[in-house]
Length: 258
Image (cartoon, rainbow, N blue to C red):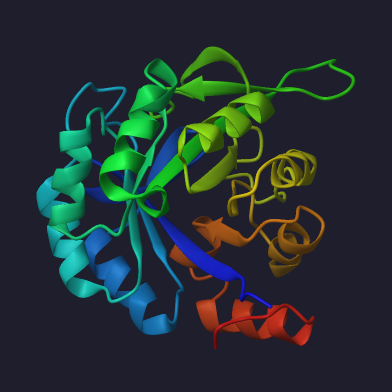
């Protein structure tokens, strides 16, 4: 059985790791290079690095921070934020990233997924999806948002499940499913959203948004059918360590790389 992955997420704004609630009210969580090195030493399976305001500020991602981060870690590094072209992807991979995550640019131009996959392989192309539940819908539906670094972003008018399916058909090799409603709340992942998308696509799905207790990660993997769990607040502020989470999940029968 494939092991499940524990992935700390470093949201970077103004050169510092920050964490907010539902993409608002960000507070400082530390230096990205120092935190990346710390999580590498602690046994994280991967790292995700998001320049959260690159798209909303309409600027390129901070290559120098990515290069310094990549020099400090020896586990897979996924980088996203402000990647708009295949050349942007190439620059990021050359800077040391193992995978690139695209969200806003992919929604605006879905062919970017295909062009990236053809150039670098699907395993390098991650779809980052920020989804918000549409109130009153039965069965439930979620709306995709873009430019989420700026106060929750804007609606893209895309159904999240349909977009996940389309992105995989276009060549995405992995999907990070982030619930805007749950992000930073530490109240648990949107298990229904995870379960539906995990059942609809053939590529790995990473749960994002809402981790507060170790039980939340367990539920995302078991009930949400996710292949990996991404978390920020619980690690950045020392609520739990990577080791304690892995021990907890392993004791509950989840295959872990210890």
